[in-house]
Image: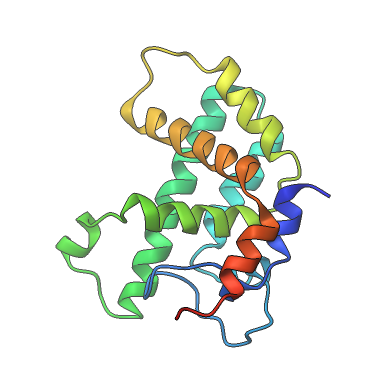
Length: 167
């Protein structure tokens, strides 16, 4: 079993999501995959990731990652606004990297992308190292850091730490 598959079967409550910017979990036994998969605000982000299964050009893959990141910001904004109209300042606001990163993980775990590591390595190896736009550089750094995080994560330790009650 891949680490992403193991992580996707963990309870949503184990993950420390940004308050107000993430999906609401009404059932404490729901997995992170179920919660994000059923959230309409983050569904487009998962779809951009799933598109990467069919992309053969690294620049197109980076564009898909870029759209994935934008969709996560939009989904978080929709959760923060809860149906109210967005002001100009609301639209200019971005998530902190910590908040964006945990939401990226949640969306990744909800997406049907069985070869995430292979696709990320494809982007790393075949993307130009110079002359990428800032948006694509950021997208590449984000997706590569997500892979490094998943590969280095001790799932058993993560679960034990998440289950421990704060003193």
